[in-house]
Image (tube, rainbow, N blue to C red; front, side, top):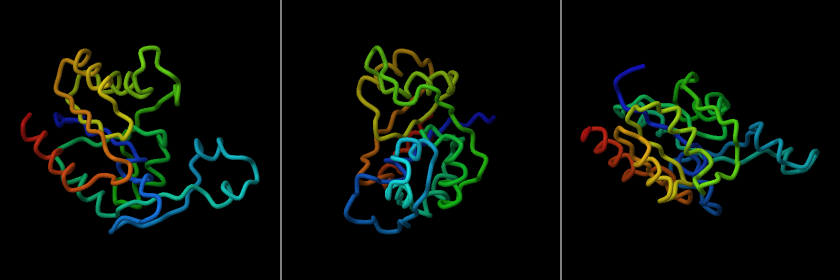
Length: 177
């Protein structure tokens, strides 16, 4: 553990701009993979399951992320599979810490995004940035009310993924600490 703030990474949306359905963004590569969570929700023997989940990743993102003054960790439904299937494609180490979610897609009684409470618990009072495409204003308010140190919840457009403006914001926020 370091004194650097945490950068908690979601895969789908920020790193895999799944909302860009028709075109592949410049600099991205396409892969077909079979993550366990996704595979379990497919019809056995289906064409979709045989083909695998299409993801688009930018190999330059790993170097950019590693160059930021943060301690990186995964905050994604991919959990440990992010170290196996995502990290190597974009140039991240295969041993990043992983937030383990045991409440996948469970509705929160207060309407929060189902990841929010676990992210706060895992951050354990450390400053953090969480990049995800599903963050809402309700989550931002909840974190502000229940986290005593600096936190930035950065919602990423799943049609665009992480772009230069978000990297600039990540650098600016870390310098401002």
